Image (cartoon, rainbow, N blue to C red; front, side, top):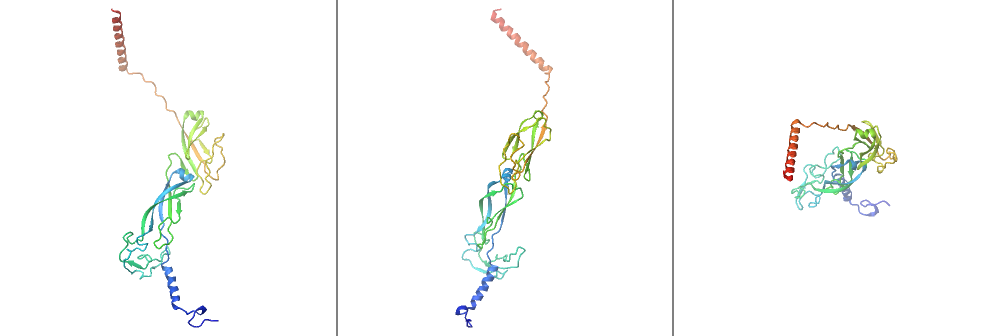
Length: 307
């Protein structure tokens, strides 16, 4: 049976304010919706070993949190307010290129406090230092960015926090140079070791490794240590393989790690300086001292014998 005029479904009296209220709620949700907090950006400095093999790092950064004094309202508690003159109390303005329609003056609240909050000075957000532990993926490179969800500023309107973006910076290594997943190093050997061969220490990630240098090695000779490079980003961070009897044949981990290319630089041994003849003046001094000692010895001998 159809509802009578002036009644809603179920025979209940029709309330025109219900429609008005729902429309107001709709526009209010559109113009005064909960907005996410701002994103934050910071740098994360890593050593070559940390970037190549992965690490856990504690990073300190600044983020904005909702002011507890005004509870994100922006005004001193109990202070009077008036409608924002810019948006005429609607909280909305023209859409920006980011799609934001909040009024810049009142930040979407539609009102202006006569007395700003003493703690946040009306910004509704206060800055605080925080430390977070970051899992650095193995194989990351300088310039790449890590995203930490919801570690940016809190929202003053109780929306979701923003994100923290960490730009990676890598300290130069004193010996190793990285290109992608491969490492490069130059090792200096003396001419005798190059001619005769022998064991040579080679820097690798996190330490050094002794390898056998073949006799007759020439300047510029290159050796490739398979699997001794950086972990390939996104691959399983397997350890550097151990060297076996054949120093350049190891377990194949090419899908996981790059290589290390060693270039040997042969340097000549310093030549010995020729013996220099003593100066003429110096030889005369030595001769005079020797003669004096001889005469003193003879005198003492004469006294001892009673002559």
